Image 1 (spheres, helix red, strand yellow):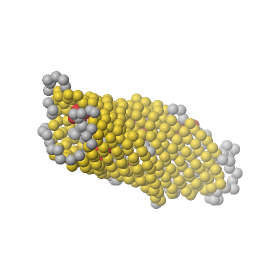
Image 2 (tube, helix red, strand yellow):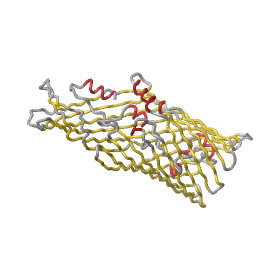
Image 3 (cartoon, helix red, strand yellow):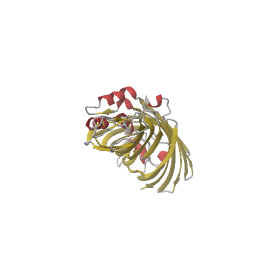
Image 4 (cartoon, helix red, strand yellow):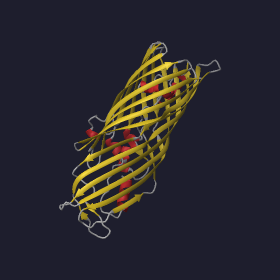
Length: 450
């Protein structure tokens, strides 16, 4: 990583810094992910709304869906996310939990019938804010890889470092916070109550903060011990934009098909702020002074492009009784690109080590008078060909369920989603930290028909 290499080049010591913070390839994938936050109805059906429309969050998949709504509406969603982590590191397992509460969605649809005798029956303006991904999380590992980052203690009073070349114990932890979010504004219209078309302009924001800590304890042949602690602190801030286009065609009262395309997201400026502190204490009969050094890098600014997204959708409506909907989404992570000099290796890695991904979302809803019962399933391939030996264990899969009640001009919906996957991180060796994630979300939405 460029920030770590800068630290190594400028520091006055002869050891190599650890790099627990994510690589630029890892960051590129992380900033391109979308966890399908939305209204509780949207989440309860696993986000399979590309051919349905009508819901405020559906316009984030296919902007043509705004004109499906025949009334003005406004929705706001509160969301609670809970993740159970289990980390594995050289035979040692550690379990912990993270809980996060937020406003995950707020937006509306303004729907208008045309005032003239025209084949264009209705048009709609839409606006919506939603979270794409939240980064709040924590994990820690402890064990012994047998390797070490710091085989020597460097003293200002001596030109020859003191050697400590055997690993005794290693402890590492990582704490992250922040989120990516998007605010979209769109326009849609319907022709002869069959063809729905729409477009939207999407404004993206990201903030990611990670604090990584490493404690390494080594000794020498005489049993003298070196206790090392290193902290990396890094913040990324950025903003960008994308465009979305789509259509829905209603063949009859039952069958609908949809197709939507979102351009790459162009982040015109990502600002990276990095700091590192390293301390060394010799616990031995050697006369070693404590080493303490802090490095603060200059702000690093660069441009970034995430992959585009293509979604094909189908839905079948069982009259007034219920519906089933399916979305298929393709994103090619080979097309991620850093748009500045100095990222040639990272861009080559995207081309050679990453792939296009397929995501399948299935949702269903059944109606009992004013009550709605919903369920869904989602599956998404991981883009990294190298992670976990490409075993597909890092793919995301899960289910969803929910309830809704129509009070008339006010609707209240509850949604539950659950997903699980593995993540692979590298500390001393490639993929030596394995993280099992089990994430559940509960969302509640109030929708007001105006």
